Image (cartoon, rainbow, N blue to C red; front, side):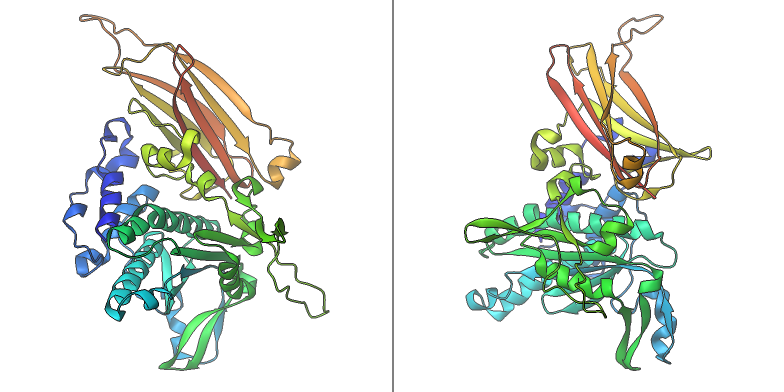
Length: 449
């Protein structure tokens, strides 16, 4: 799909690297692949198969290419002998369904339907792999994928799965549907539905099913089955999160919402998976589910600021003179922390660095920069630390010393915090000029183990 190429060409090939740190810009600056030159049927060959990954992975700080084939998870290949043994190991399960594709068979030829469905499935496959997921199985219009493995932290598997779903939704809205409209396909009824759930080590068994060459190695557990049911409960272009995931990472209600359904003209809340399964004693399982708040979470994503600003409205405001980065310091080792990309340990020092380009920007100074911190989750609530904390700084242009005069090319302001509580926490940075006009607003989502 040429439009998908163009979207990521726009994301990657922008003139923002002058304000970025070395650690966050290396992959963008070193990329010399022209997305616009790719064929319209992405992916269609060895290069195109991994093309989408080359532009998604650096955004999340991931290196290399995920080339794992479909089928058995690479960490459990030893179980392919199907000798009856199994391994208990956590997994984060994702079930993706293409909504509205069946009706295409009534509107278009089999060749056209195949071209469309295969293109969408290929995008799903590459987006899953771009976020370190493993594509386990294709089932008609659906994809079953697993996130995590023996070398991946449990929490990071959740981050990867949620970021994957968010990226897919963005591609559907801003690439696939416009491509459909341009190529004569009806896009009104098209979308994806995603279900994601997490099962810990003691609740997920990896083992072989079937007979050797007529079988497969897969995961067994309530969370695995629930991912499919959660997908069925999601609406078009929605991601449904299951109780296992919600509880494990203490996902905040502020970045999710209860599903509602119209009944007799009224909105009826649907907080649990129905029909309600029963336990051994006959009591209802009451398995909770919540929809990811896409636009709220998107504002925290590492997509470029101007791309997020188009979707998130006033919550994100781009300005070419400003850039916000986050530097983490753990035991004396510094690294660039990319928003929502991974979970950090507790007691990691964070430096939020606002850099303002003065030369040529004609800013009405002095500027007022406000850093606003919000902590979410049970641990923060127990410590009564969930109220918004705001710190405001006044930023002045600094005159150069010595011969030549003028002003320093940049204003740099740093604000420090420390990771303290498990869950998702946010930093908002907004900048106003001397007249009180908001010039810039950006976010960093910090995930903490």
